[in-house]
Image (tube, rainbow, N blue to C red):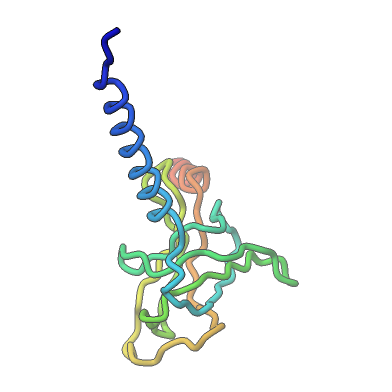
Amino acid sequence: MKKNYFEPILGFITLMIAIFFLNKFISVNTADSDMSTYNLQARFLKAGGIMIGNDVKMRGVKVGVVSDVKLDNDYFALIDFQIYSKIKIPRESKIKIASDGILGNKYLSITPQGDNLNDYLEKSGELKDVEDYESIEDQVSKIIFLATQ
């Protein structure tokens, strides 16, 4: 009986490639434990679909992750997020909930503003300049309202 070595070798190579890609997938999608963070928060009228694990971006660059979304005592959406410790957020920054396209994921977008960009938020600080989320339905109703006037 003739032995076929091609199939076991091909199976082994396929298994090694699958293990490599699984390892790469896990390493990309887990939080970097070496990177230390500090917490900040913001209060919104509407959370707009933001969830734990969504990105926090400053000028399009990821600088943190949303860690908690809950209601405070005044029924505002209180969003806690972690910022990488090497990034400093100016106190007069504006924060809003944005999305990647029409059907894309939501994320927090921070835009530094004001004259004093060297005055940074402390740990557990709160961003006060908040732009509330507008859904597609809100935007369409504004357009219809403007068209009827």
